[in-house]
Length: 121
Image (cartoon, rainbow, N blue to C red; front, side, top):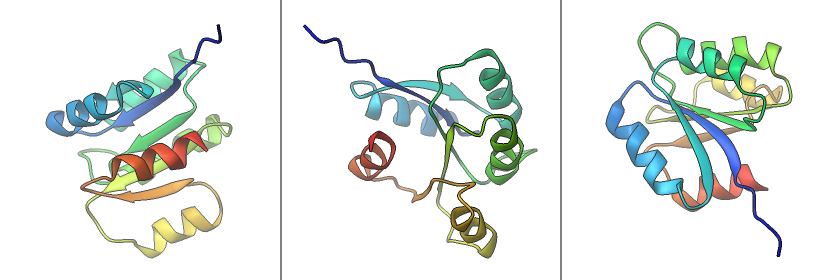
């Protein structure tokens, strides 16, 4: 019998309810690790070698989601980075998508199947 290994993803959001909602939404499909800041996310990435996708909120205290992507992508080029935000597309986000620094941009409230399709395909 084939054992299905769940993709391991890191979800970064400074708001606790958002983190828990995301984790509960995807618990049957993905192995979700949570971080509440860009700095915590970087520490998790340093300790884990099996995270395939990082999905981050855009606006957080301290470093933004784009700051995290910029810093982490240079150290972990094999990981796919995505933004999940309630804010509209900006020229900077579009530039990151165009140069493949960002794999995907999602809007809050998130669509479960849109995110799942984007990160499993």
